[in-house]
Length: 270
Image (tube, rainbow, N blue to C red):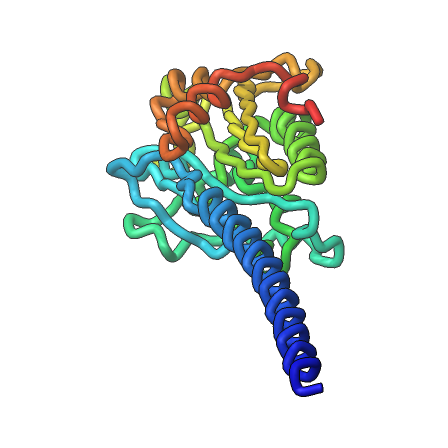
């Protein structure tokens, strides 16, 4: 009887040990999985998606970052992130244009555009800043404006902005860097001497699960009835024209591949 009781205790202890070991192993695996997911997110988030810094002042607002060119009195680039769930249709457009207090040299002013014949063209669009009142208000800083011909701003450029917002719904996250092509300007306006660009560009990097893709556009500052796809270029092309180095903190193998793409089918591939 004593031997039988001892045997029962040993068996019970072995069962408990086995269950504990299985639970520990399962917890270890789950913990490992969570740790790997965290590392993956940290890896993606650790990429600096901003262009390389230069002599211009880089300004961080809450919902976008820009590099301000004093000699052109506008941003050479504006960078922001889009996701499918950061648009709130209850946030209405508030056309309250104002000086950007963060620009050390002073930003362009509303009067620079007065009777100039050019629109105050948003770089980070108000339509993409419908996150909350703060984001909407930030989008109306004059540092976020670039002189655009009315039929360009309200036409082909608006069509591209709408398409970018749609693409944000098919990617987990979408990063946009946009700005004017400031070389060989077509005009200068206002007492502050605001450069009127000959074209504007957008570069896009989309993340979806394990995939990273990029595409870009350069569109002349003029009326156009052409499809936006006729203005497709690679990020490499935009770098050559603007002399801005985009996405340099990606590993070379990723950077070289995504920056060479100008194929819309690759960009839209599931």
